[in-house]
Image 1 (cartoon, one colour):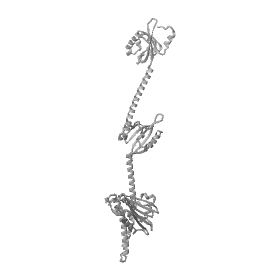
Image 2 (cartoon, rainbow, N blue to C red):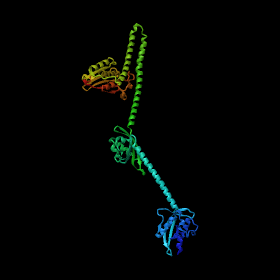
Image 3 (cartoon, rainbow, N blue to C red):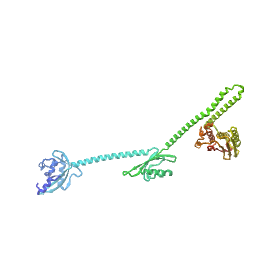
Image 4 (tube, rainbow, N blue to C red):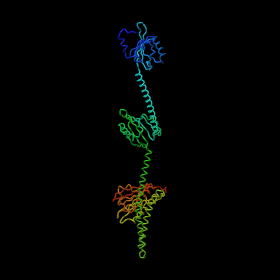
Length: 509
């Protein structure tokens, strides 16, 4: 077939796309340079006159004949193989993907000529396959990541729902629930879905809501918080951290709330046990000190008197023997009192001492005690006693006597010579008051809170005999009678002990 002008021939020969002209019977009439190069032929002569099937893979040859007949019957300008990949076959038998577009025209003999534009799309196909492969890999990664996220979410939900003794919460800036879960909700019978959207502060007591709000507002500023709160006899440890967005803004925070009531109780129990142990150690030290001091001196006196007795063997030395015998008796009596004090504490703590209510004439009982102690008072000391109100009350006379005798004997012991000691009682239908006042050495201010502790003695009485048990015993006796004991003291001026005992009715006797 010949071209009428050279320009068309040049366009055909030098076109980048492969071009092929065939007649309606499928015979190749002309191909350009790009086509023969694409299909690996040395020159066009090897193709001209051959059937188009010469450049089509074997498995597609039979189908192609049918497609050619269809096109001849209904020719049009169109692209072949839309939606599928077409292939060409090179001279060496290798197959490669191509893109084919068809057009047609009639030659000077009015015969149909089919023009095929062929493009090698091997590189494009390779890129498409690579993109497809990458897409498949990406889809696989997305799928795996989705599974991981799903598993992580399920794991987080499991952790959150089973978070022991507390809750895991996510709040927005208004402290509304975004997420909440934990065993604490289950124990309180609360469904977490009921809380989502509600405000956290409305669940809190007013006295702690303000404090918690201020602390959580700091978390939205990027400052982590950890603190404890108490509500309805329960203790909670709260830890809060910000959940920043990609741009750094903080619209949500994570709050972990744990009930630490049991831990607090255990901690308090341990603390009390340690305090008790410390107290027992102090008592042990005081007891050893008391025994060392209060027993050593009397025992030394007994030993000394007994040794001297052996030297006074003559009849005219009886007065000297009597002096040391009396000294031994007095010392043994003092030791007996110390032992009785120790036994009294034991009896009270073991519940051996029982309260026995009787009618008591207050004036007579306390007057006898005042007279008894006046006989052993220090030089120049005067004991004055006054009573007002009811003369007869219902009380335990034995405990009442021991309380009064102990307080009054302390006043004698710690008062100066020539000082006045006052014992005053007052009774009405409600209570009996016993008050002892002395003007002696007094109790140092810093030690007054320890005065009722066992074996405790103030630092200003170390040179005065005593066990540190008296006031402890008195307090226990007062408590047995459901009473109260208090004191005020100004060192070197005045000390006043006051005991208030509730009056019992006659029906108690």
